[in-house]
Length: 437
Image 1 (spheres, rainbow, N blue to C red):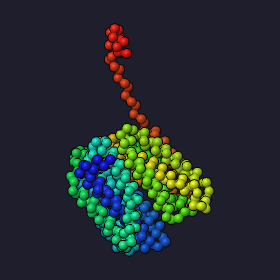
Image 2 (image 1 turned 30 degrees about the vertical axis):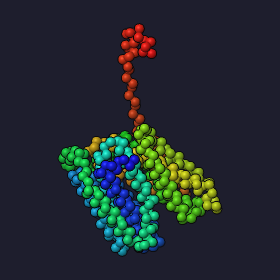
Image 3 (image 1 turned 90 degrees about the vertical axis):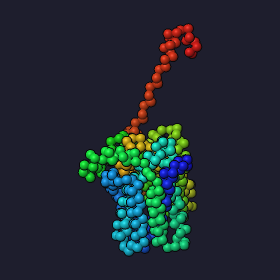
Image 4 (image 1 turned 120 degrees about the vertical axis):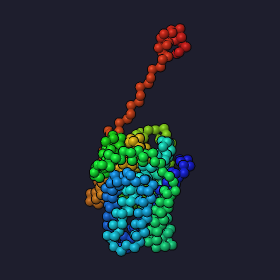
């Protein structure tokens, strides 16, 4: 897998992704502590609103940026987004009211909605070989999973030495380092030139039409409609983990707060294990044969979770239900990685190179729309109807998404085998028929 890091351009871009993710992880911890300082017991409401702002920014801004940025060199666009994120992180330690937090979060997530799709669209051009691109996707998945596990530990270590507001300076450093790494390489211009050549008629269209062009392209291709349905299945499973892990661990199983990160770690561990193994699997197996069964697995795992949830409370730390929960969380992480990791391959194979930026922006926006639907379902249903009802509802959503994906993504029929000329020769030359047998 690490062989792709021999490519200097990709190595610098991947390192930029890693340091930016580390900075984002530090900011996540610091933001929670800042919200508590500003709002006290209402900190959860502040963070919930900030999460909603993040998702709305991701859904609404990425297609607009893709429509406006088609003439901007991608390196300049990536660096500008990193500098904007660094500027926001620089201002966060000095805010004194909640509305300022919301404003800065909106700007920060708008910059992220600019950076991420543009970054994703560059990698297929840097690594045009399918085998290399597959390994890059797995490395990217590992980077996200590792950040979710390592950043809280790093933040905890730093908090022993400094106040939480200093963590934002780590975020600033991460974004500035990311910008410097992007500047240090020359990005391919082939697809960008093609897009610029087609920009004349596109640019003449209204902004709204150009903003929706990527989404229309995405929804017009059956395989990409299937990818959207698969993203919904991932969101259904992931939302239960992210929103309700603390409820399962503390309320359902009666375990300590220290077991919450263990459960989340099981989810990340399952995802990382698949990301490590998947490149070799995809060398032999088609994407469809991996992604569709994983979506049905999400539905099955959520159904099993409903059984575990209704098994009753236990005073001994959950009894058998605690290891069962860890196994289910690891399974959901693995199933999510089986769907998300090959997604870039599927998208690249479905659209022309010149349309990749718009397609990645559309996928970024639509996939986060799935999370925007799944988050409140997991939270509101869990709080009002109970965890079993929430689990069954999201399991049904994942099952419906998997069925829609299967219907939209038809298998490609194998070409009919060509008839050899040898049998006709044998018919013409009976004396040699025994030799041909």
